[in-house]
Amino acid sequence: MTNGVFGGTIGHKVRIEKVSGEVIEKLVGEAARRSMSALSTLSREKPAEIRDVLVLTAAYLCGAGTTNRSDPAQVDLAVGLPLAWYKSQKNALKQRLESLSATVSVDDSQPRYISIGRVTVFPQGAGVVLFDGSRFPKTGWVGIIDVGGYTTDFMLMEMVNGQPVPDMDFCGSVEAGAQLLDRAVVAEFQKQVGEPLPPEMVPSVLDKVLAGQPIKYFGKEIRLSAEVTRAKRETASLIAQKVLSVWANRAGHVEMTLLAGGGALLFRDEFMGLLPCPVMSNDPVYANALGYLSSIRSKG
Image 1 (cartoon, rainbow, N blue to C red):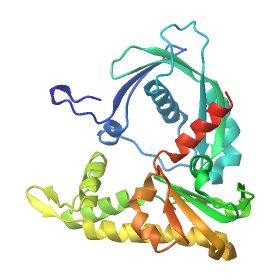
Image 2 (cartoon, rainbow, N blue to C red):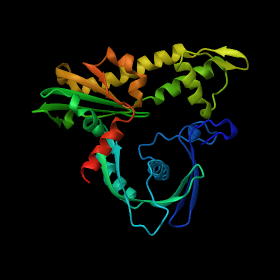
Image 3 (cartoon, helix red, strand yellow):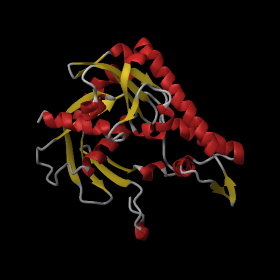
Image 4 (spheres, rainbow, N blue to C red):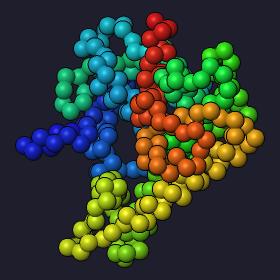
């Protein structure tokens, strides 16, 4: 969403018209995170309406859709689900997304009709294997830790003749991620100031704290860096302990632990001393998406 005469872009304003005629207007991206009406959910079953808006917006921004609604062209889609919920939710997610179609406009641009066709649902982290797999050793054990906002997915694979073979007994999800830093900022701000930090202010405050800058509140400097540093250390330790407890006696044999997801960037330094042979993905934020893309492209 462009900020008028100032020209700054902090997200997108989206208008979606469903086949039924229902019209939905939402903010997406940073514009949503910083809005006073922003909502967050920690439920395992993410609201389908939110997911639909995000999928259609992403498809539009990638150039999908047509101005001619009678055009039968459809968009192939690949998505991921946390490993812990993959089996129970993948079929329902696939069916819902394959029935998704709407006329979409982003930032008042020309509306386009988007219809989702073939949908492939991957276990979260599989995209990292597809994207970074060329870096793996030909034999031995390789781990993947994919840190998201609310969950961290992990996999352990044995490399056999250059091919990764996941062992599902050593794969799973940890209900911890970057969002724990948000909680730390909110709690420490309340402690020091005596007033709650509005949810829409959390992103900008956390950005300043991570940059090592104090927060100004009614002219007074509020320093939250120590608390966020502690939260980073404790969160990384929590994730590492849970992963290593599952990997058990395989952990000592891991030759590479590949770190991916936006959260991996936040906890990079902390993970270096906690995990066996840690290395960063070539593109931590988009590794999964790029891996999914390569998969659907190869299917034609």
